[in-house]
Length: 260
Image 1: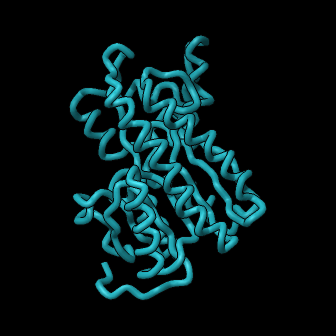
Image 2 (image 1 turned 60 degrees about the horizontal axis):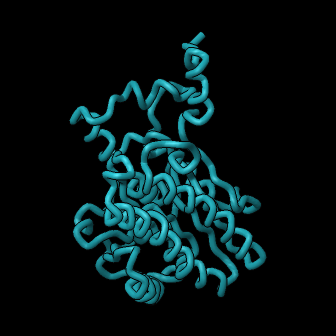
Image 3 (image 1 turned 90 degrees about the vertical axis):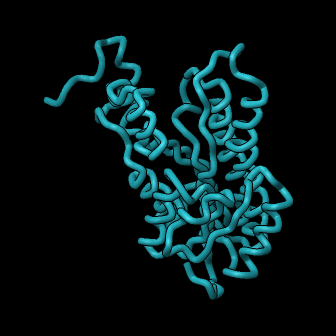
């Protein structure tokens, strides 16, 4: 990364950008010309993309640290005009009596509160400049019933919040959208498959396209929603799920038909 950063007129900030879908977003956004700053936990600095403008260590649940990061980023690199909220944590599958409130609160704190704080803090700066675009990473888990009793409600809240902020800031030129990935072949999911914790057949069988989503495919959708091609799009939730939402209800009819 650049040890002597130059200020730019437009910066794209990606939270959770050191791994998973966030890292895929960083890579693709740099490829299409964005000046990207990565935000993640301090331990992730060494894995951040080498072509990013810089790395900012910050916990998205820490309001005062986020406010300090805004000042640091804008003073060092330039104004944040695009924000990708990808920072998040997963949840173990547990019944309500097994899921401790400590874990429940941690998931909600990172996945919902952290996303909201980033929107509120960086979005306010965008509102003052009357320019900006935000994409929040939600999930298909927030759109259907499933046994993740903290993660799924957190992602549903992100989808709801996205529409509310889009209406709140629409007249000031700030767009807010969400992308809901389906089962995506991140390092974490691949590790779970390799351990035998998840059966890839279960993950793919109900998707209309019969496959997993690749992280790059999510990143392309994120980049589109940030781009000038999407200037009339705000308040939407775009599933990138290889047709899982379309195909999952076909199980009661014997499943999605094979290729014809």
